Structures are given as structure tokens and as C-alpha cells.
Image 1 (cartoon, rainbow, N blue to C red):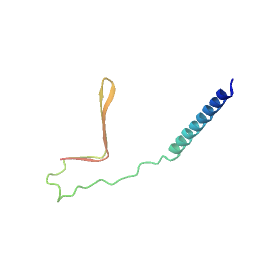
Image 2: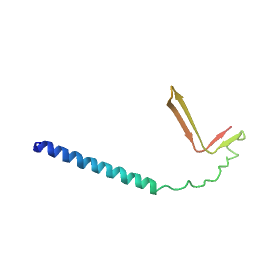
Image 3: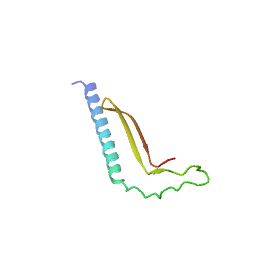
Image 4: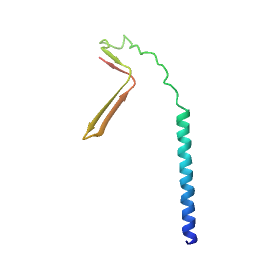
Length: 83
């Protein structure tokens, strides 16, 4: 092997090891930093602003649409009111 090939191989190995270390640290940070979701009180709509009463109150939903087995559209919300 030439000197140049050896330097490229060692550089690639060092870059790979650094990338694996970054991924491992990120994974550990995510696993150890998981907290339970905090409880949020229900939102009471302001009666003076709303002309029609709230029919339904959603506290979280996810809607996904697929086209040919591949997700094409996704919508998520924490809270929503239906009038």
C-alpha cells in the first residue's frame, strides 16, 4: 500500500469512529432525557369571544393519509375545538 492510501484509510476510520461516537452520545442523551408528558389543564374557551358554543373539544389527534401504501399527508394537533 502506498502512503497516500494508508492516510486515506486511517482518516476514514477516524471519521467513522467519531460519527459512531456522536450517534452513541445522542442516543444516550435521548434515552436518559425522556420525561413523562406534563399534565396540562383543559382549555376553557372564552365565552365573550365565541358566538357559538363548542360542540366538541379534542385534546390531541393525529391524522395520516396514504397514497399507494406510502404516507402522503400527516396532520397532528395538541388541542382543537369544533364549533
